[in-house]
Image (cartoon, rainbow, N blue to C red; front, side, top):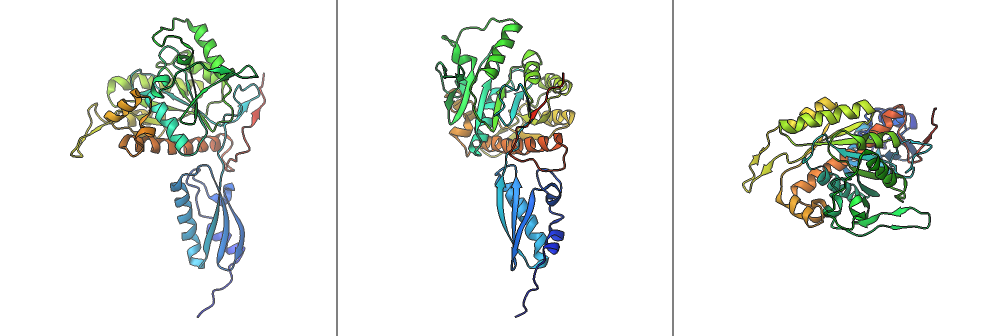
Length: 370
C-alpha cells in the first residue's frame, strides 16, 4: 500500500484559498470566517465562523471545503462557530441589547403585512433566535388577534413595561393597553409619535436577536420616527402581485431610500393559489413582487401562496408557521426567514467595510457627532 505524503499547512492554506463564504460572497480565509486549527495525519481541523445555523449554509461550506481538499487526500473536520452579527447602535439607542431591528412594511394597506410579520417572527424563533414583535400600527393593531393574546402588560422594578409573551416571543401592542379592543384610537401625529417612543424606550425587551416591527400602511410618521431613533438593520417590503398594489409600494421603497433604511428584500404575499390537482393559479396576476424587487435593487425573498389555513389559523390566534409548519405557506415563510438572517449579516458586513466577517461581540456603540 502506498503511504500518503504528509500534508503541509502551506498546501492546505493554498487549497482552501478559493472556498467562498456563501453569506458574504468572499474567500473565507481572506475575511477570517475560516481558520486552520491544525493537521493530524490526513485530517485537517478547521473552524468555520458562520452567521446562521442554517443547515444549507453548513452544507454549502462543507462541500466546498471537501472539494478543495480532495486532491490532497485530506479529510476536513469542521468546528462550527455560529455568531449572529449585530447592528451598530448610537450612544442614546433605546434598545442597545437588540441585535437586529427588522421593519415589515409597505406603502399599501391590505397586503398582509401583519400576517407576514407574525409568521416571519415565528420562523426566526423556530430557527433558534430570540425574537420580539412590536405592533407599530397604532390605529389598527393586529398582533393581539394573530397571536391570540390579551392582557395588560405589567411594570418591573426599573419602571419598564414588561412585554407579554406567546410562543416564546416577546410581544407589545397598543391593543394590550385598550380596555375595549373595539375602541378607536383618535390621536394626532404628536400623540402617535409619543406612543411609539414609549414602546421603544420604555419596554423591557431584554436581549434579542431580532425585533420585528409590524408597520402601518403609508409612508408617514411611524417609519420616519423609527429611522431617526434607531439604527435599523433593514426593511422587508410586502406587496401583492397586482398593479394597483404596486403603485403604493413603490412609494414605500422610495421613502426607505430617502431616509437611509436598507431594503433587505421583498415578499410577494397572496402570490398564487394551488388547487387540489396541483395546478397553480395566479389570481392577482404575476410579476408584481419582482418589479418591486427590481426597483428596490433587492432580492425577491419569497412568494407566499394563498391558503385557507393562513387565514383560519391567524383568526384563531396561532399563525400558520406554528399551527401547520409542514404547509406550503409555512415553508415559504421559513425560506424568507432564512434569507433575512443571511441578508442581515451581509448588511452588517457591507456597512462595516466588507473586509472581515462580523462577530457576535457587537452591538458597537457609535459616537454621536453634533
